[in-house]
Image (cartoon, rainbow, N blue to C red; front, side):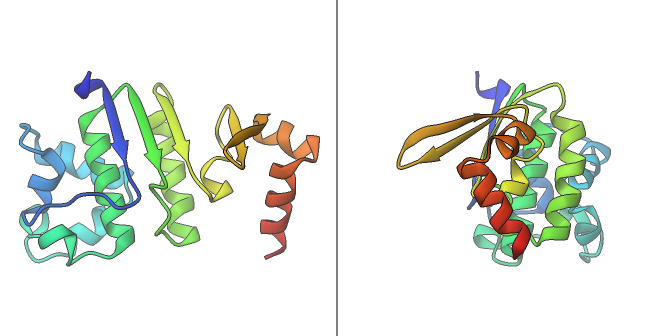
Length: 166
C-alpha cells in the first residue's frame, strides 16, 4: 500500500542530507529521474544553481531552503515515487502565485492518470479539480466542479469572487 500512496504536507519532513537522498528516500533512482521530478516540481533550476546540485546538503529540516522550496522538494519526492494515489495537504501554501500556477500546470500533466485529493484554502489549488467539496463548520455544504459551483452562487462562488477582487 505504501508504494501506491503519497502524501505531501504543508510542512514536509526533510533530512540533513543531500537533495538526492531527500528525493530518493533510499530507493535506487537515476539522476535523470531526479531531475525530471524536480522539473515537475518547478525546483530544477534552483537545484542546478547549487554548487553541488543533487549532492548539495539541504541542512537540518531543510533549513537552507525556503518554505516554498521545501514544499516543492516534497512534491518532487512524490513525483519520483510514482504513486497511484496522491494526497496534497496544503502542499503549495508557501508558494507565490506565479510559481504555484506553473507548478499546477506541470502537476496537472503528472496527476492526470492518478487519484488525487487536494486539501487547500487557496481556491487556485482546486480550480482544476473534477470535484470540489466545500466545507463550512466541519460539514460539506457544497459539492461539484469549479464551473458548477461558480454558477450555483454559493459559498464557493462568494469566496472565489472575493479573491478576484483582491
